[in-house]
Amino acid sequence: MYQLLVVAIALIAQTAYGQNCDSQNNGALCLTGQCCSNAGFCGTTAEYCLTSQRCQAQCINDGPPPPPQGPKPQSIDTSKLFKPPDNTFATKQLVGYFSNWAQYRGLDPSVPSCDKNQSFLPENINPFLYTHLNYAFVFMTNNNSIVPHEYDDLDLSMHFNKWVKGLNPSITTSFSVGGWTMNDGPSKFTGNIDYSTFFSQMASTSGSRSTFIQSCIKWARDLGFDGIDIDWEYVGDPTRGGTSADTENFTSLVKEMRDAARAEAASSGKNELLITVAAPADPDKFNLIQVGGLRLSVTRLTGIILMTYDFYGNWDPRMDSQAPIADTLQKGWSFTSAIDLYLNAGVPGSKINAGIPLYGRIWTIDDPSCTSPGCTGTAGISGRCTAESGFLAYFEIKEIIDALDSQNMLSTALNFASQDGYFLVFDDQWVGYDDENSFQAKVDIINNKGIRGGMLWAVDLDTADFSLTKKLLEYYQSCPKDGDWPATSANSEAEILCSSDSAFPQETQTRMCNEDLTWGVVDNSACNPVRPVSLAAQKCVEGQ
View 1: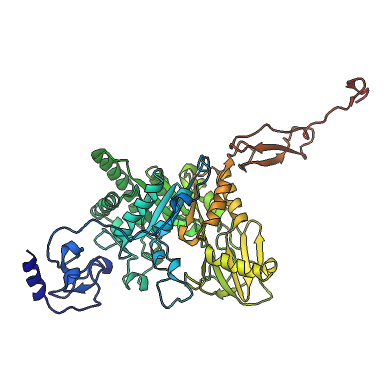
View 2 (view 1 turned 60 degrees about the vertical axis):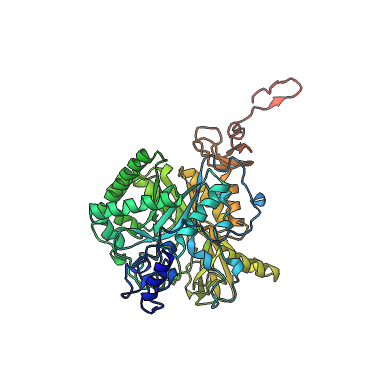
């Protein structure tokens, strides 16, 4: 057998290196006599042509490919991983997205400021900090099947699930198909292939939907995921490959996927796969979904994950927190308004996770004398490691904060705008982002509106010790909203006005949220008068 393979390979024409093929490249084939490797390149040697080496097309069959093994694990002392208190997720969930391109940080020689220690792999995730983790992103070809976007998505996915579930068996994982890049037209990140119409094309017929659904189910089961997350950006948007038929077709897709997942679970004996969608926070994009179709889809979805960030960025000259707490420069563009948009459309709060960013958007200031939110600027600097103009990961922002603090410059640079967010002004740069106070405000909103929880984009953008995520989880430990009493952090006192029928409605009453997240007794002594008592006679004073 081995000799026949050697002869067969020797007869293949000379290698043409660099030609791209198959799933990575819209199903393109190699020249006659060449094979398409697992990485999507054409060649003639064993690593290109043998099925045992995961050749994709025009292959020589020498047996099945080996099961994915994943990259070599890093050395992590799991005993030192932070674990939040047991009651942290008693009333709320937290979804974290892992971006599969974070593995490349520090490996690009054109970004010398970032070293290989900045590479982020599954072993860098602390799986105790989340209830759900989503692997982002894989793509779909024009034959409606799931394909890797990064060359090692198969291996990395298996490694991801092995790591997070091995440490935290209660965690739930999904893979996310789509994303901004897939829906954004041809670019260097897509090999100059235009994937933007693929979602619309897939959803347009029952046959193509069935192919996609079965491919999703197989991908999830083969790689150990518990669910499927659809990130179609955006349903019905004609500027991003969408059509007017998308809304109805999307509703059909969700229904048929739920039916197929239920049938697969019944036949396999496994738990039914979760089905979630990443949904727009922009009111204009929301209107494309159409409320009736959304309500119908929600009944079949496990949950809706709101992308409540990127309201502002350097595509707009106006500088602001990219994810304001409440409306600032534009009506309807905020964390609060986006949640209300879905609740008012009839989406149950129990199915909504609201996104919270672990990154900021940065501008170069136009006028040094105008640095308040609403002033103008152009695209700001690139991050030391993320290397994208106008974008800074939280760990990069924290490095700048620490540098300013070491030079006693932080007090004049750091600002927090109530109901908006943080902004940092340094040199000629202006960055809007989330930090402790805005996280607290957003958790309060999550609690008071009764939604399922939050979502972080992305887990690999926090500091190495997940300092901001840990702070978020401190706020997660709270007593739930109870009538007029707002959700309140553990060991904190809530305060509201006295009832309107009390003697002093302008005064306040208080109530303690206990450490075990139970409510204490209401102290409303300030709401009603206390009649003066004669201490000597132990009776009411005459006339009072």
